[in-house]
Image 1 (cartoon, rainbow, N blue to C red):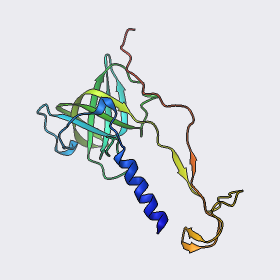
Image 2 (cartoon, one colour; image 1 turned 60 degrees about the horizontal axis):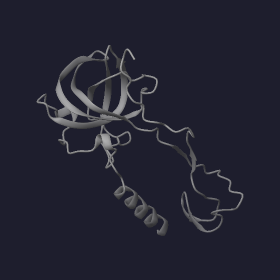
Image 3 (tube, rainbow, N blue to C red; image 1 turned 180 degrees about the vertical axis):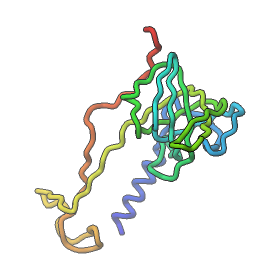
Image 4 (cartoon, rainbow, N blue to C red; image 1 turned 90 degrees about the vertical axis):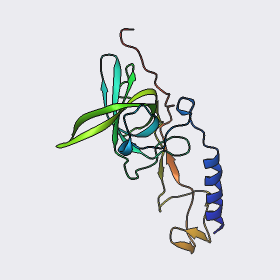
Length: 191
């Protein structure tokens, strides 16, 4: 019980410290791509990248919309809010902005793009993006029931996977890329 309470308090403390990155700050309409209107409303939407299409002087992103958390980052794999297209001036490399990465955009809804999802005709709300923010990859957390701790951390009575009892238990193992994931900037064509 104490561990659960401690974890809940830590999570609440971290959530209260969440800050929105500078390019994404501001007040925006609480609409989703499913109920968007092409009336020039300012939006902050995010989700998972489906496809990136560099063009002559802009790059367009097809995005599967997700709810945003307190820091404007897309939440996990919850229910989708539809799809939308966001275009921003400059070149964004499809290798950096690859499928499945989390992205948040800020901009103005300016119409509807029509395309196909499989054989289905789909109307995408179109956003003229003033800011595009690619989120760093989330670390992969692995917790194994066969975790071995040479210092016997967690050996003895306590809370395990199936309730109180004896056994080995310890912190999750965190696997992450050690290289920093810098925010790529758009590069204008012809330079």
